[in-house]
Amino acid sequence: MGALNLLPLIVLFAVVGGVGWVCYQIFLYSNELASRGVKKMEKKNVVFTKDGAKVGVKEVSTERYTDKTQRAFVKTWNAAQEGGAPVSRSSTTR
Image 1: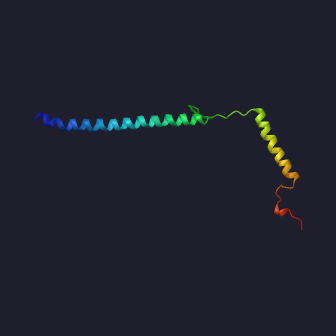
Image 2: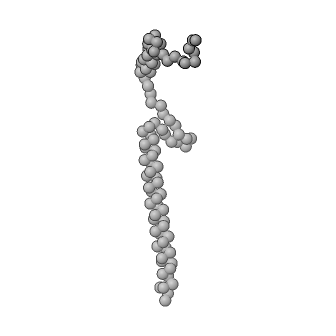
Image 3: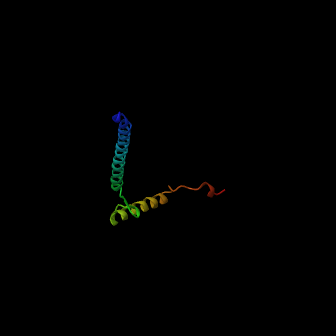
């Protein structure tokens, strides 16, 4: 008769242990998911610190920057010289 009185206590411990195990597995999965997210963001030059997120900018050499700027300027200049620049409809003469 004494063993029957302990049965609900054993069932209670089993249920609490099962719920604890499930919660622990969820905790492990969420930590793994967070670390994967951090690694993926670091590949995109975003680093999370205590102070917040820091975004790194990919370095562009001065020569490449100058080349791109000059190319855009030349395209604009050529379009203006050829009359290829768009004309506003409101500024037409009557």
